[in-house]
Length: 467
Image 1: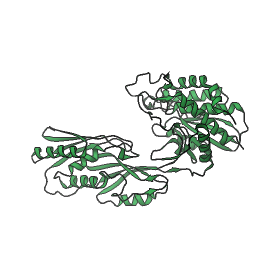
Image 2 (image 1 turned 180 degrees about the horizontal axis):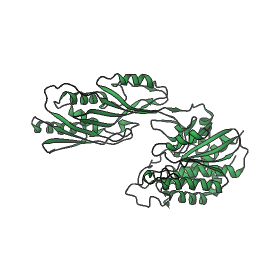
Image 3 (image 1 turned 90 degrees about the vertical axis):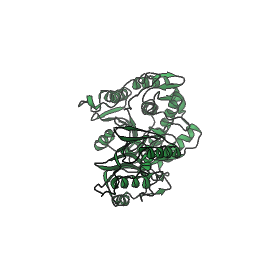
């Protein structure tokens, strides 16, 4: 039985040094300064080159794939084991207590943008490959680290890569949580757009504008409406105060150029579970239904409240679904817009299960009275059977390395693993650890980095070397 932890410990100093050098590269998307050699910016290309050159120095076979991706390969055999990582990071933002691109080590942690997402895990996987390679076992598969450069944005890297390169027969992405994420919901984004031209109902009150949210996959935490009221303002601002107090959200109002401005502050959350937040747009829309409005506004806000307010499972929309693997379908209303001259628009993020019939759902959506469907995009669900060799092997490895049960996880979000036909997300965040990816003072525990490296080394050995 190989002592993988001991093998990692032998290489600890080199691993940390290489990781610090890697973290010090500011590999943030920069299309404004893109070139043919660096289509996503100089920093992203520098990070890709760093990993390819490191791999070449250590005896891997490197390949740059159109400056958008690359890979490092070793081993032998017809089948290919893929390890899908990425070198790009989100912007650092403000409020750091350390240099966000310094790779500083203190209090048992390594700090930097990308420490946990995904440069730390990438270096763990790299050293896992290096350990297995240096031990020279007999291979029955080729092992390939596939290096992406655009995971934090549009995934152009993997789109380009798999148009030009081989799809692994199996693989994992060290870019999520331990133990194993074996199923991910499908993700559909689309707009419901109001058909305009409804006849008036005698009311001269008008919603001049109403806006909330900028992204399909986030619960909006702020909403604002500009309302022209022919009636007494006092009645409706008092009603607004009562409404926000009863609903437990923050609200404010003021008069500007003769119009009443209503604002609501909610609670943001990821769109995969809307009930974790308070959708400011939906709360404000619900309040506006209490006002006598013209027919067009009345139609839009009534539909919005009746269909989505405190209802995130698609029941009122007629598209609800639940399966045993991924649970409930969810709908997040991420973007809400209404303008008196144009009508209303709702931007929806729908996450659905592995056996959902999307074509039937689209027919239901297209039959909604007074609304049309626009800008529909769909990323299909991803699922690897719990009986699959890949899942069974990774469970075994995780349990042997940690002494804990290798639970199978399903999520509403999308990981890099869905780029693989047969792939799962496998670490690096251990159960109970705080997820600080994309936050200020991002870090990874050194202990976890080394533990993940040992897990990945054994996983590679079990999947690609044992007969």
